[in-house]
Length: 226
Image (tube, rainbow, N blue to C red; front, top):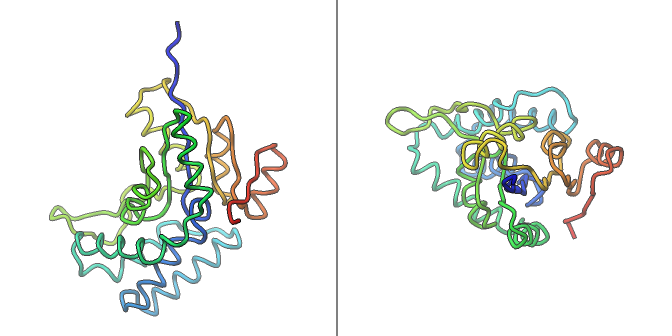
């Protein structure tokens, strides 16, 4: 008899579970507190423009520009800043429908995973708040002493990397062939790779490009902003 596979419910974070983009909000948070220089703020604004209008952009650039101003702080201090940002800025941006959907998926026996391009230090309190079973987010490189170098470690968890990161995690923690993506939730056109791998793809408050694709593919479209 074939062993029943574990169903995964995979949630994007920015624009899906919260209103807004945590990276841009975090950059503003740091700039107001003097951590990000005007030069790096300009780099971030240019990156945000290219992201918004679907122009080619380097995923590492924005994250390394943010960390450029935090190089003098140790990992404990940086993580404390990120948690404070989450609690002060992001807590009020959670979408109740997203929180309800996480609970519903867990009640149905699905394993819930939060997957995000945002920094792990921001995503960790988000995962705790949502009560998901696992978290995949962008890691920043550290020195042997445990301090951040300012560079991304590995790949930014965005676009097709979200799908491959989920697959690698599930193979490692559940076992190859013993899982499947039952549901996936995303808002941006780059989430199409993750959504396309799910039995039930859900486009949440999608942008124009993802909305068009979702209609073509027959994916469910929901509005969690209300």
